[in-house]
Image (cartoon, rainbow, N blue to C red; front, side):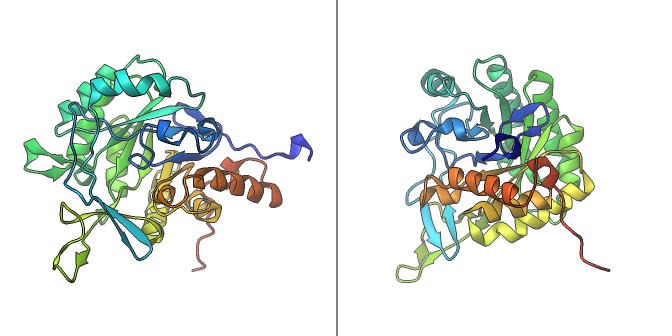
Length: 312
């Protein structure tokens, strides 16, 4: 094969350059080390860590996972070792990677997010921050950051002031109109958007009449949500075409990822399918490369947002 004909898979997420568009979804890949014996992590466009909070979190009561038709429900509860243990115990491995490392952060207040960003600023081996905004703000009576443009902008503004790292705002799908929230995140300093988080859902054991998850309801991910999120990516890209988007939700193969890219995503994140096949990201990457090669696409960036609108 002529090397000159190999497609260029490089993408830009604001100031962050990825050698290819395939990443992993926060919360599905641990801190990377869990997968190191399954494939070369450096083949990924980036590694996204499990969400970090200021203090350690034990998470929700088990069971925490429940399969559904075409999807997976989880109620992990952001279990993580906390900021300081993350830096001491997890970052030494992550620093050895040659691909970018994106650290996911979350808090119960805007100041929590800001404190995390300030502590992570200047830490060797961290390439960008992803703000997991699908958390309730305890000072606002439990209102979720990602569904309130004012709260979202407050977080992004405070974080932007305290870090020079590229900033990704991870949005919630639980809104009737995502464009306004996306614009609020960008106007407040976010360099890119991650679309989208899980959908609230409930599964019931009909024999016991109890929820199948220990916490009751949980977050639905997987193939069931993909068409909804593809539509949200397309809507945001139409309104904010210059803003990079990382899309996630039900990616099991290259075709799924390419749907998102054609809708307007620069990058894609594999999540739920890791539980059934941990090598899915590498298969997705290979499939994207094959598609570009077979269809004469010289650069993956040329495919972003090329959805042909319906005839009117």
